[in-house]
Image (tube, rainbow, N blue to C red; front, side):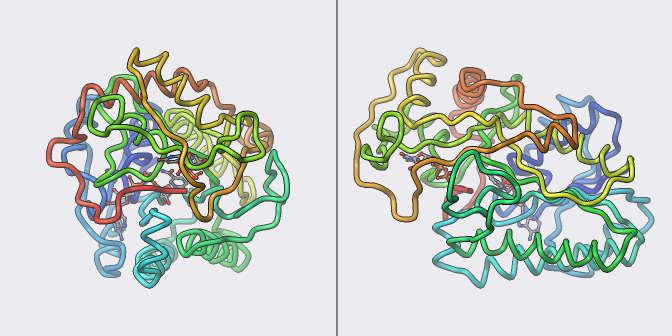
Length: 348
Ligand code: NAD
Ligand code: UDP
């Protein structure tokens, strides 16, 4: 298929492109580089043996989005492009509504106008907010706690309404838990701008000597060792699920929302120890106050992904740490010209 990948230069999008190209899909990438580097194109060319067709455009520019579909024979869209930092979204919610929801509306309009009826959408476990219990299933109540999460929920709802109104339009919302790690080559990976808010990139930067020590947000949570528990998932497992979701749509199945996690919870200290083993580096840390808005424990019930897509996570936390470290140690400052993200790149 010919697949339009929005946000294709970003962290998860670039890894998905490697997987999709490996399965024989032809790719058209679009990105405005607000949180990524055009240098990823060269890395993708090395990994896939082919220079990607990468367009600089902003999804808020409706005419530009429409232009991407003209004469290209696009069969399906994978929609990664979004602003994703929770704290940043609390400071400038309108920008998040405009970029994420506005951009998605333009994309959906262009898909309709050009008769493209298959969409894989990057959603997030953030749509569950503070869940009543774990593991979290897809039918758990949806209740978001910040503007970023609200954009994800609204986008899921917009897509759902479109699927209801038009039987020819089908979509898979993939609800990611905590994506980490990198392509095993070390050529592509996560390159947050500014101070990372997410755990794994912060740990990487401590290990490589860019930061002194990790602040562990709370040691008194009701968890295995008092630190927060999350469901970390290797970005290569995540990448594979996008290709599986496309196959699912091609087979003619109905629309669905699907968790992507391992089903295993890992505490902050368990991750730090795994990272120290994988890297051979010490990761000094201190326990500080809880971070406002954090929750104790979130991990997925990933069984629906297996039932519908035949997908299961294959990498464990040791592999996630090994590949994150391989990327970080080879690219201490990220892609050479670095992303210019004012609010860092934390996501949920
Ligand atoms: P990323 O910031 O690395 O990638 C997003 C890409 O979209 C960037 O390259 C950015 O420049 C681009 N972009 C943003 N707005 C755009 C616009 N208006 N027009 C064109 N391009 C635009 O983020 P990521 O970690 O790869 O996340 C990809 C998707 O997955 C996002 O939708 C994010 O919300 C979602 N998600 C991420 C995580 C995570 O922890 N990384 C967790 C759950 C969900
Ligand atoms: N965390 C931490 N120090 C950091 C960043 C994160 O202790 O510098 C903890 C955080 O409290 C949570 C876990 O690590 O328990 C994962 O946080 P992240 O921001 O990566 O993901 P999210 O909270 O959005 O699931």
